[in-house]
Structure formats: structure tokens, C-alpha cells
Image (cartoon, rainbow, N blue to C red; front, side, top):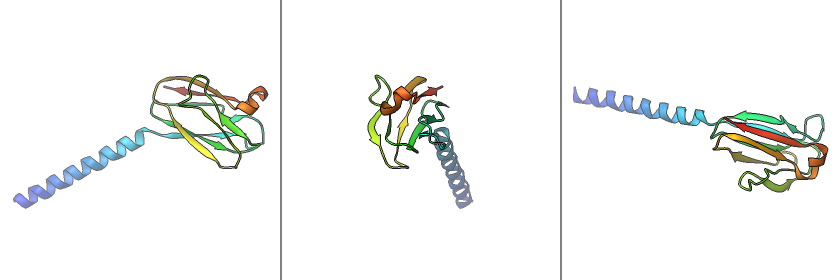
Length: 119
């Protein structure tokens, strides 16, 4: 009887642990933003992303390099280094709700700007 109770308790706690890990990893997500559109335009694709606090944005160099992503006054979110290679990427996590505007330094004058809206 004692071994049956131990087996049930072990199974129960294993299930709780599994569910806890699944829920915590499912809460945060990553959204991809392309640097340069598939059509070769000087734009972020998409130009606006809506995420939840704790989510991340993965910036991926796509076309017409070089590109970067700069958030005025937010060095912690900015990636001032230029990406030249297709597929070059970096990830930034947004922990605080708000609207964060960014731009590509070489192409800001061409209108290459974007926005991350964190709920």
C-alpha cells in the first residue's frame, strides 16, 4: 500500500513539474522582424509588432544590407553594429510595457523605421 501511494505521489509531482515547465516556456514568445523586405524594399517587415511583456523580437538581416536597429535613448535595446550577411540576426527581449520606435541608421532617411508595441 505504501509503495502504491509513493508511486501515485511521484506521478502526481512529475505531472505538476511537467505542466509548470510547459506553462512557463509557453508564456514567452519570439517574433521575427526582417531587415529589408522580401521584395527588396528598404523597410522592416513587419514594420510594427505587438508583443507581451517578456516576449522577444528576433531581427534578421534579409536584403539590401547593411542594416541595424537603433532605439533612441535605449542602448540596451539597440543593435548599432551593421549586419551584412543574409540571415545574420540578434534577439532583444522587452520586459516593460510601452511603445518602442526604432530605425536603421543607414536607411532612416529612406523611411526604414519600425515600432515594437509591448502590452
